[in-house]
Image 1 (spheres, helix red, strand yellow):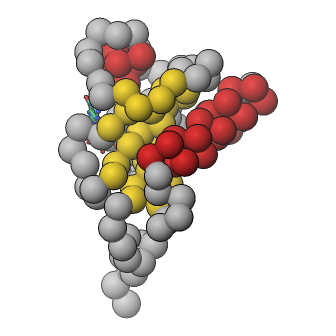
Image 2 (spheres, helix red, strand yellow):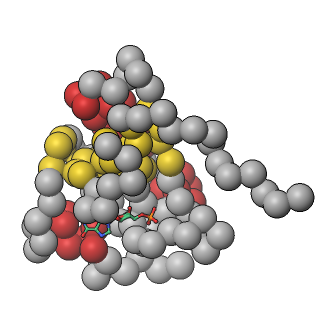
Length: 122
Ligand code: 5GP
């Protein structure tokens, strides 16, 4: 899938639409999700043009990958959620219901998050 420069996170990265930013480093920014699913719901977004975890893992440089995942850890510590716990999640493609085609990791926290995933019907 080709990268779409008009996706909403590309517009946020270019400063064309606002976000509630909580952190930024050379390779990533983090901002609050506009429609939070948990009391703490932050998105960590690499600055490079990657559609999902698939091309990010394949094509990003070691520095981009390190900068991105260090940002995830830093944001979690900054949010104060390490002691009680948090969940990181990244959706790729149709079955995962990825909505925004720019790679991002969700950080969910601030409540008991329950089981990891809804079990399949048997
Ligand atoms: P996905 O399903 O792609 O993993 O999740 C996309 C997330 O982006 C959703 O949780 C949605 O609420 C969030 N989102 C969509 N548009 C915007 C926006 O304009 N600003 C912010 N801060 N979050 C957004």
